Length: 365
Ligand code: CP3
Image (cartoon, rainbow, N blue to C red; front, top):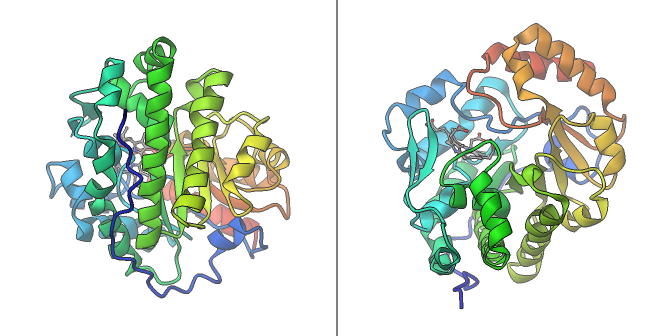
């Protein structure tokens, strides 16, 4: 019998007095009209910023940085100071959960994450200490409340990786383009995989609920790797997991904050399944479809996206041109948040970010 993490833990409920009534980001999620789209970027704090590199150089270990609230707050505020984005994102990582599961997570320089003890057999799934994870991640809730105290009229996105995306790293042990080991495990051990996804869904919902209680205004669920699955496994491991998380958040933890769901490789026919994110929920999408087509397909939800981050590498002029194209494709009056279709790349010139922002602002002036 696998252990679960459904026991409620004690954290200090901190609800800083923020004035978010006029937040474009939250208004858009509610389907309200705003003067222009809210602007933000996935991975907006990070390696493309020289001021990030400066803070980063003070830590040898990335997880140690994630456990230092003064540093995580400073890093989350850096892109707001430089660009005036309309939302802040907690500075942390999706791999905090495997870290708290004691799988030996390390971030090696220029190699990305490496897990020393990945899942290799079904028995490894059943041995994972899920009941301890949410409490062990208390450094994340401390980072949320520390950041919340600094944000006055800017909403904060808390976040977590989707269960399938976490499972990819937990089985593969490191990043990969198609995660062949993770997929092999799913085909070979469907029962253990289902159990893993279920445990991760319950744990992640609890983890997000603690972030909400600590002051996160939006719960951002990041599914980077669902697109590599076939339709039946996408349904089971991505969409059903999302439904469990939404249900747990609302009915078990009593949290009613909006969910923003990022799916790389979202297929257009999942309107029904995605109703579960609720009327205040939003979808963050990649660049594989024009924004207007996504808005038609998912007309009940705000859409965030979707410029290909590689465009920014080509410089400000190219960025301006393609941002303009993206905005022309958006349906006037449909709730829309201007963003990228995936995380900003480390080599991105900062001028391209300015070009993106200026183009959005002048388009709606
Ligand atoms: O502003 C922000 O969004 C920063 C917070 C943030 C980080 N990671 C910080 C980070 C967020 C939202 C993430 C999400 C994340 N992490 C994802 C999902 C989004 C995506 O890009 O697909 C994934 C798959 C990870 C796992 C991860 N963490 C990888 C693959 C790596 C190494 C390479 C990379 O992508 O940056 C990390 C390390 C990491 N997480 C860094 C940062 C700033 C770089 C660490 C360093 O400076 O050494």
